[in-house]
Length: 156
Image (tube, rainbow, N blue to C red; front, side, top):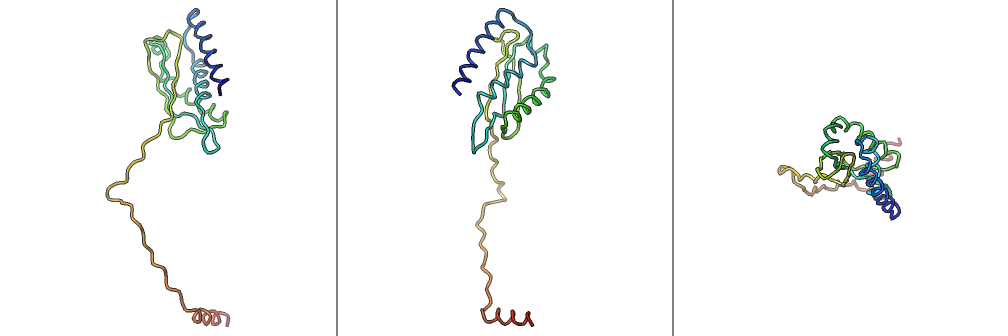
């Protein structure tokens, strides 16, 4: 895990350097790569299975947001996330959410991804349904002699 984080830091800084020097438009493949990196970093093990976050926030520049039209990309990104989940043999709890947000501080061609494990709060029971203890009566058993007589009667 430490090596992945270190690799991520180096990759981010090296890419950041080249993005500043040679700014280009943000592409779908780059966003997918950022998502894949975030998935690798935030993967958690629980009950013998690997889980990935179910909420992803993608921060992009205003220029890229107007050019890319993020709503058109959502279906492709959902497909990419599901494919990566399967390839990594992982699970995602609850509904998968992807949101685009613009960040004025980001340069054209750059993207930041943040992910979270978001769980819906358990809904309380409606007032008319209350938790009750159900008391069941134990059925009366017949006397052993009666059971033996009935058994003999069936055999005959």
